[in-house]
Structure formats: structure tokens, C-alpha cells
Length: 116
Image (cartoon, rainbow, N blue to C red; front, side, top):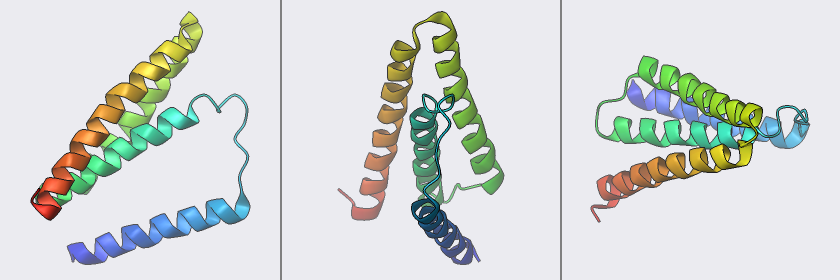
């Protein structure tokens, strides 16, 4: 049953990428500063979900809530930085923190998958 959900998730991911390539959506200028941060926050959640799945701890409710919450908080931090006039510094801080988490999860995945 879990394998079916994994395949369904991968198919949805491939379909989303294909639609994005074909349609080539334009990001509004007002949302442009937030998109890279949202993508990195989403990647953090995906890598965390993958790690949880391989450790047998995955919960779809937790994953969805974490996904929405992480993206929202990251966007809120960047928005707050823009309002305070320090948007670039806070964006960099968010990228660094999420990058550290992504690489930590990637290292855990590597150890779990390859034993090294």
C-alpha cells in the first residue's frame, strides 16, 4: 500500500514538472522574492519526509502540515525582512538554515540507503 502512494507521489511530481515546463508560468513581480525561499522550504520538507519514510516514521498528515507551515513561515520571514528593509539578510539566513537541514537530511538518506 505504501509503495502505491510513493508511485502516486512520483507520478504527481513528474506531472507537475511537465506541466510547468509546457505552460511556462510567469511569476508576478510581487511574488518573485518569495519563490526561491518557498522552493527551498519545500525541498527541506520533501527531504525530511523522505528520511521519515525510510526510517518508518512517515505520517502524511505531518508531512502536509509541515510542508504548508515551512513554506508559510519562510515566506513570512522574507516578507518581514522586506518590511524592515533587511530582506536580503533574512533571505540569506533562511536559505542557510534550510540548506543545513537539507544537507543533514541528505546525509542521513545517504547513510540509510548506502550505509556510508
